[in-house]
Amino acid sequence: MPEDKDNGFGFTRHNARPPKPRTKGVTEIRGQYYSARGKRYLADVLETMGHHVDGLKFAGGSFSLFPEPALRELLDLARAHGAHVSRAAGSSMCSLNRTQRAR
Image 1 (cartoon, rainbow, N blue to C red):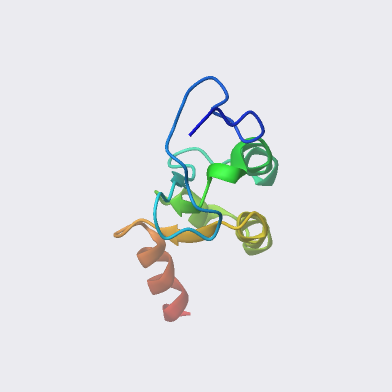
Image 2 (image 1 turned 60 degrees about the vertical axis):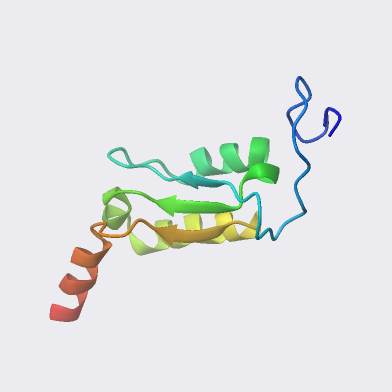
């Protein structure tokens, strides 16, 4: 594919990718692991290169420390940019779920 100056990679040739939602050529970014970053950080990433991002994966447990409204903002922001949201297997979300069930 020729350079794509509108969507990045304007400096190199690359294979064409289908438009979102994609089932092939999917790019998933990992969310914060040990450091909690909020909505503005994710917004910057998605506004500058969201065309290439198909998913956001919560890699560690720091997201479990977010207040629920702040976490929902992150989820809504990712989905508004056409990105699915998932969590890494075995993350501390399991611990969070157990804690919530115990209440």
